[in-house]
Picture 1 (cartoon, rainbow, N blue to C red):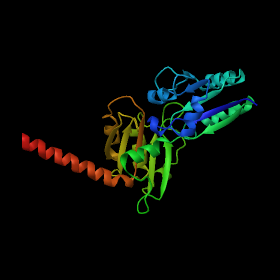
Picture 2 (cartoon, rainbow, N blue to C red; picture 1 turned 180 degrees about the vertical axis):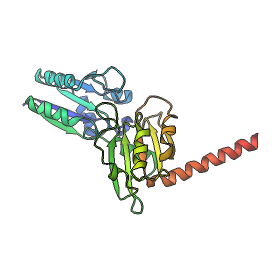
Picture 3 (cartoon, rainbow, N blue to C red; picture 1 turned 90 degrees about the horizontal axis):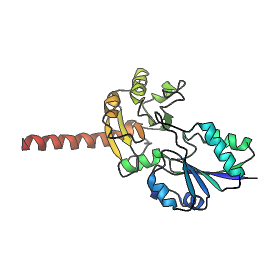
Picture 4 (cartoon, rainbow, N blue to C red; picture 1 turned 60 degrees about the horizontal axis):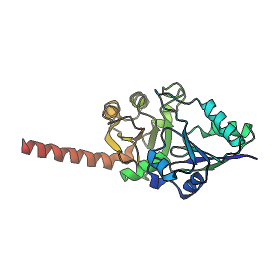
Length: 258
């Protein structure tokens, strides 16, 4: 049976690529990579495989999922060693389920190499734990980007609004403000700490800290068009306090100089 491998590239830092992922990539003939796979990851693979972008990004020219499926099937049946390279972990908002189903229907065996998901790299970069015995007994991953570019229609707002739950919001750059409003309407406190993190783990990582009721304003302060991940929860209390302390110190220094 023909075989293809789905590989998680991790969040962007090439040093977070797993040893197994690198070995599989360097043995490939063709690598079909997503829009969010970093240039540094592609450079780490080296010149051996042919790398083909099959990126999908909101508001930009994109490959249709069906066309990506067809290309994977065709190349694999032609006998090439094909790797489908996805940002983060393929099993977390990577549409790997659709691709696995299409490949299986075509009689192609699928192997999956997991990657470090953005949430894990984000927590490490902020020196926070996403769960905490005292204030966060559950953790939920949610996408803020549905099939039509809006919030998914069937989110569990009551569960997401639980104050003892840490939320990791993937793809929330466009709809984060609406998400915050819905959470507060369902009882989540507007004073809940939040962090907006752009380009997680990459050299240009940008972190903006504030509170849930200011999320729209925080999102407007992004520096560029990089992928955005939002953390919402009490586990960020220490980070928020540290941020306010730094801001207060900077203001005192500015007034003294003025």
